[in-house]
Each structure stands twice: as structure tokens, then as C-alpha cells.
Amino acid sequence: MALPDFFIIGAPKSGTTALHAALAPHPDLYLSSVKEPKFFLCDGPPPRTGGPGDAHSYREWIWQRDEYERLFDDAPPGTLRGESTPLYLADPNAHIRIRAAVPEARLIAILRDPVDRAYSNWAHLWADGLEPISDFLEACAEEPQRTADGWAPFWRYLEIGCYGSQLRHLTEQVPRDQIHLIRYKSLVDEPRETLDGICRFLGVRQGLVDHAPPMNVGGYVPPTLYTQTLQTLFRQGASIGSHFPPQLWRKASLPLQWLIQRTPQHRPELSEYDRASLLGYFEDDITLLEEMTDWDLTQWRTYREGGTYSVRRSWAPSRRFVS
Image (cartoon, rainbow, N blue to C red; front, top):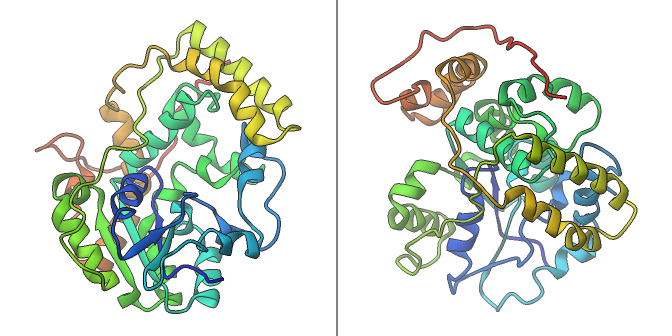
């Protein structure tokens, strides 16, 4: 039994599922069939309560070491073992646990424009029927209270996108040459070169994987009365279903979730006001990330090509909560 040799550690909604799928066929690599086992997110059993649907998710975390190590039992001799849990990057304690357990492990992070990432994160939970607030900025404003109430990490739309501070802590634990950073745009626009770069970093053969299939891409669910009624029923069902095995609840909830998502639309672009508001939140962290990576992240500070903002330093969206 053995632990992984490498990890895809972040960030959520930045192409980690596509990256996992792209690397899995490589003959020199073995990626766990369970994506996001979340083993290093906890030291002992995970919490039992949280936000909508969290009770099911927590029960699916693989937190016992023997069960975690069994994920890699079928790795062929000589292959590098890996797993993908994108929340590791945003969790300082996960950095410490990984370093202590696998000090030579190599870590891969794929980073996306933090505003786009946050919006995608919110849209994912909204389309799943779990997010109760139909206004993106208002949902972001609830983040401190949700965190205090013990909602799971995936609800932290803004905090997860603070890559600069996350990377600063990570490099205090792990040597910089054991960390490989890529940008989401590179994986989308230059998949062959990006995947070859990862293979060089891992020390395996190049040229054997050359594309990242679109994965985990969902449509937008409009906030109609019909949709919101179904979502309310779904969240109520999730609360009741938390007393049953998660696999049973997921199977039983599929028809209702299908009804919620049966007429998906293209996700509308953020308004200039919304994007400018969130850029004010991320501005200092984007600057820190540029200093740490030598990346030019000017594009992350724009709403449309050719247009930039004079970013506000405060962030206080109005609270127009949806009942």
C-alpha cells in the first residue's frame, strides 16, 4: 500500500476534472478512479452538518488511511500514482498534511480568473438546486456567515480564488520546484503544450496525451418561480436524505434534479458593476500572485477585451435576498 506521488490540488471550477481526465490515459501515470477523495482535507472524520447537501458530501469523503491507500492498489509497477482534490490548494492545513505524509510529492495547480471561477462555482451549486440565493453577488456576501456556520469549503466562492495567499503559504511548506502552476486558459488554448509541460514536471514521457476533454460543464438555470420551487423541494429532500446512504439519496434525487436542469441556458455574462465589485476584492491578491509567478495577469483585471476598471477597494453589494 502506498500514497500518491503527485496531486492535482486546485483550483475548483478551473479545469481540474478535464486535467484529471487528460492525464488518466497516460501509460506512465495512474490516477485514482475516485476523483476528489479529499483525504488531506481532514484529520479524522469530516464534519456531519453544514450547508445544503453538505451532509451527503461529507459522508463521501475518504478519510480513513487504509481506504485511501486502497485507491492506488491497482497502480501498475513503475507508474506514478496521483489523485485530484482541487480544494487542497485553498486549505493551509492540507498543505501541512501533504508535506508531512508525502514530502517528495509533486503538486499541480491550475488557476483561473478568480471572478470567473467564483461565478462558475456559484452557477454550479445553483444549477444543482443547492444554492438558495439567485443573485451571485448576494450569495458572495453570505460567505462569511456560511463559513462561520460550518458550510463546506466549496461554498467559499471568494476565498477559494485568493491564489496568491494560498501559494504563499504552500511555498512555505513545499519547495517551489515541487509545485507546477498552469493557467486555465493555457489548458483550453494550448492543451498539447500544457500537458507536455506537466509530463516534464512529473518526469514521464511527453507527447502521449494531447487534449483535455470538456468535463463538468453545466448550463445556467434561470431563476423562474418554477425553478426556485423545485430547488426548494430539492434542498428539503437533501435535508431529509442526509439520514440515508449518500448513494441512495443521489439516485433518488436524480428525477428532481433533471427537472431543475431540463432547460439549461447559456450563462449570462456578469454585469460590469458585479465584475468591478469583485475585482476590488481580488485586486491585492492578484498583484501578489503576479509577484510570485512573474505572470502578467492584466486580463484578469478586465471585463471585456480592451476595457479595464479603476478598481474599488471596498466591496459591499446591496443585499436583495430572494425568498
